[in-house]
Image 1 (cartoon, rainbow, N blue to C red):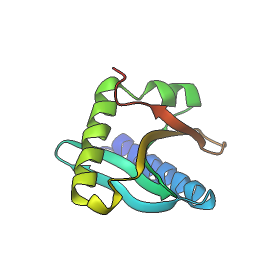
Image 2: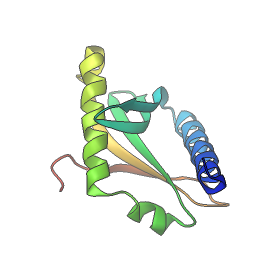
Image 3: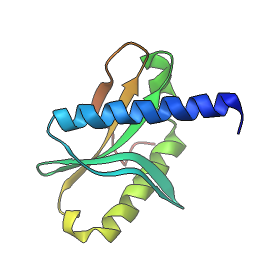
Image 4: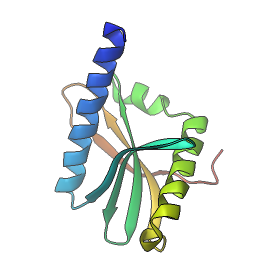
Length: 122
C-alpha cells in the first residue's frame, strides 16, 4: 500500500471516529461500523428512537468537495447494503430507514446532513 493510500485510510478512520462520537452525543446508538457486504458498504449504521440511519462519511479538504464525492452509484451500493443489513436484522425492519451524510473537513466539526437522499432519486 502506498504512503498516500495509508494517509487516506488514516484520515478516513479518524473522520468516521469523529462522526461516530458526534452521533453518540446526539443520542444515536451505533449498531454497525464499516458494514461491508459484496453488494455495498455503509460507514455507520445508527439508531435513535424509531429512526435507522445509514450514514456515509466523507472527509475531504472542504465540505463542498466532500459532498460532491458521493456518486449515484455509491448511493445505490449503500442502499443495497442497508437492504442486506435489514434482511439479517428483522427486528429493525419496522424502523424508519433513511440515508444521512456526514461531511468532514479539517479544523471543523463534522456537518450532519439528515435524510440526505431518498431511494427513488437517481
